[in-house]
Amino acid sequence: MTVFPKNFLWGGATAANQIEGGYQEDGRGLALSDIMTAGSLKKSRMITYRDQNGQPGAVKALSGRNNLPLHAQGAVLPGYYYPNQIAVDFYHHYREDIKMLAEMGFKTYRMSISWSRIFPRGDEEEPNQKGLDFYHRIFAELRKYQIEPLVTISHYDDPLVISQKYHDWQERGMIDRYVHYAETLFREYQRQVKYWLTFNEINAPLLMLSFDQTAADCDYQKAYQKLHYQMVASSRAVKIAHEIDPENVVGTMICGVTNYPGTPDPADIMLARHTWEKLIYYASDVQVKGTYPPFAKRLWQEHHVHLKMTQQDQQDLLAGKVDLYTFSYYHSSIATTHQVKDEVKGNFAAGARNPYLKYSQWGWATDATGLQYFLETIYDRYRFPMMVVENGLGATDQVEDGQVHDPERIDYYREHIKAMARAIANGVDLLGYTTWACIDSISAGTGQISKRYGLIYVDRDDEGKGSLKRLRKDSFYWYQKVIATNGAELS
Ligand code: BGP
Image (cartoon, rainbow, N blue to C red; front, side, top):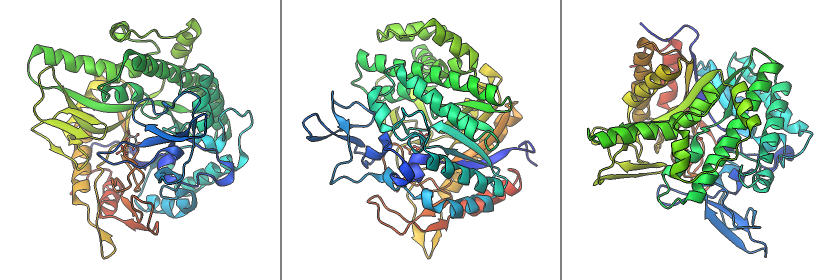
């Protein structure tokens, strides 16, 4: 017995900057991710630069992602390891990799396009043909196996030149650059791609801030402004996608964290509610309904944010509502007004520890019920088709005799798939599920490959050593069975 609909889109997800490598190949320009160093659970990733006198330096990559000092230029410096530059070299292994995805029975593959492969600086009028060709080859390869591509247009991958020129989305000019890029993709791949996501985790600017205890009002101003410009850019892209091809389905992509109140204290209940408003509904209301929610004013007032928003922006937001609600889900969190004795110190995870849950090696609370809670809560609010486009366990793996036994990852998936089944049984319209990731890749948060998410293992370590050889993990065979039985066989 299965509750999963007949055409349920089973698959896996990746992002260009975390798997492709080939960072200087075929005319590709530098992206912000190419100048991000490796970090760890305890050590932040850094962005390296040269200041106006040519002196080298580095800043934390966590909040603003591009908070370089005035007049500094992001640069690749000697003596640093930049894991995304080669990543797992999908650029040269894509045939072999896609064949393995097909072997698992994938119905869909979520991937992103590297913006600086198409527009190396980001501000050109004409795209880089070789960059376009690369994705033509990918889409043709996917079609060969009847795998439906689901394409993220921007996944933490802004071209370095425009990222600096427009100060990480602080200036309106960035919107036009993005829209030109998105329109180029819609036209170029019109017959090859139908499912699009405009920005990965569009609510990330506000989420990142929530981990920064030292954030000042000016940081909030930047985060809200960046998000506003990205949402305007997204809405304009959605409108164009629909004009070019009414068959296009364009989704929002939200970083989905389920927040629970820490205690029954009404103050905690209220805080949890307001945390959902700030971190989830603020962005997704704009994307789904086309207008800012009523509580937005309170949020702006709290941090003295003065949003630069024109009437045209408001019209654009209304004219470019998304068709689909997609999100990532890894863990839940706790919101409390009480003093916290036991604190979580994960990468991109902080706050009180939930005594009812187990935590991963990187400090993320494994909570499948939280996924069901998120699906049902969001579906209640929007009555919108949904898709889980990232979900998985980052953990170290051992290779023994050419095999990788990863029972914990299988358990994680099993419980989350069961949670999706319960949400479907409760009425949620769920179209698909893509695991994060299908292949080991560079962690966005820490830059480590040892935080492995793949169903496919890649022989590479945190210093960039290894043969890049691919191996099927136990989870690969397990997921193959899940797909073959449309979610009926989970043992
Ligand atoms: C999401 C990102 C992904 C991915 C994932 C896992 O936020 O969209 O790009 O990396 O998180 O996070 P991490 O890589 O930090 O473990």
